[in-house]
Image (cartoon, rainbow, N blue to C red):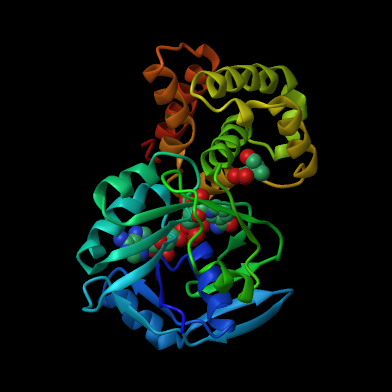
Length: 305
Ligand code: NAD
Ligand code: KPL
């Protein structure tokens, strides 16, 4: 019998993982922030996964963070800026051999969580799956994407990867998870802030080719300086490819700003700039982009941290 999958953060990605694991018959429990959220969830009767327009509801049990009971396997599916606080709220429930899977985009939040629960094994994930919610307790999934998983402190895979295979969650274990996360961070830094500042779809960046190329050159420099040369390989070409392949889409940061949601800027561009500073490296364009984005967010009454 598989250990229970505790899912902290029943938003888009957390619900997607919870529904697929439940569909495969794995034990799953949602961990909700407070009694009000729990009552709202219980009144709805479960989480609904919509695939190809077909909804299916899973009556996954839920509890609040302060409920009793140990957790040995925890999937953290909050935004990067909420992850540490959310994990702190359940830290007393983690068993001595607890494993935590961190789904956050960007970098920095994983280390914040690891420092908060130093005895737990923290497994980092980099996901290119896309899920979104139109209503609470319901998630839409188009069925594309992939999940890389790894532990920078331990190359041995955990014993629950079969649960993911059974649940149809596409994944691969990698000893180079930091390279994957840095590569995605660099892609996000080269594309997402510019789509916000130029108010355009990803494809609109073909009009700003020079700006994108200058950022890619600085990001390549940063990746080399901070010990991630593999993540730097052909970055500019890959960024151009992603811009073409996703030309009709709005970037995730663009959507956050449009929907007046807090962005994960601190763990994307912010992390890149802080890392450059730590290595005594000046990246003038990246730093200017960061300042412009902070100003833009502030002018729109959105948090910039
Ligand atoms: P989301 O906002 O849809 O979900 C986050 C959930 O966490 C919310 O339901 C929120 O209420 C909950 N939460 C926050 N603090 C909590 C706490 N203290 N206790 C309990 N619950 C708490 O976010 P998302 O889109 O699912 O993204 C999660 C992470 O995955 C982000 O870092 C994002 O960048 C990354 N990601 C998302 C997608 C996607 O398609 N949605 C794809 C790839 C990566
Ligand atoms: O991952 C993305 C996002 O929108 O966050 C893309 C646009 C594909 C790369 O930045």
